[in-house]
Length: 134
Image 1 (tube, rainbow, N blue to C red):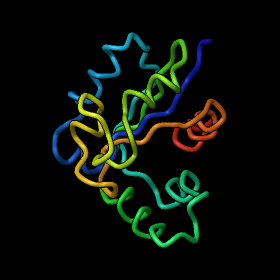
Image 2: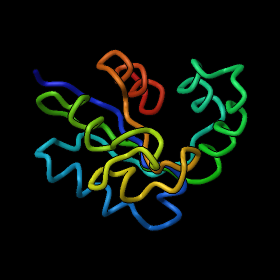
Image 3: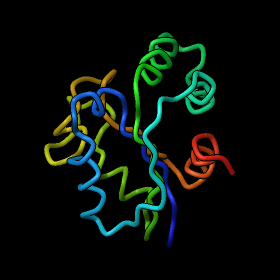
Image 4: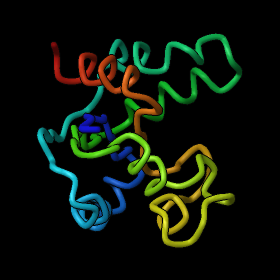
């Protein structure tokens, strides 16, 4: 089934110059890059995206981190895009991520895990709206 998903290269990967290497992983899957923008997230965008974590001990640090520098916001589309991208990214904690996955190869720690991706088609629709408008 054709799907769209939201992918964001986080500030740590942008700062370390890994944008091209990460994007090429997605290009190699045959997915289509529909939109891309380099920007620094506003606190409102960050809060909307991570609303489910509000009140958790790591929430304030997460918001501070994700707004600390530019990110690369992207919309990718294709057959089974959400699951394909999730597999490509690897486990949330880079220490648990398999070699060959983006987090396994580029992630430093769970707090600097280089990439965010939608976990469902519904989340992708919501996140694309947050970061690119309706």
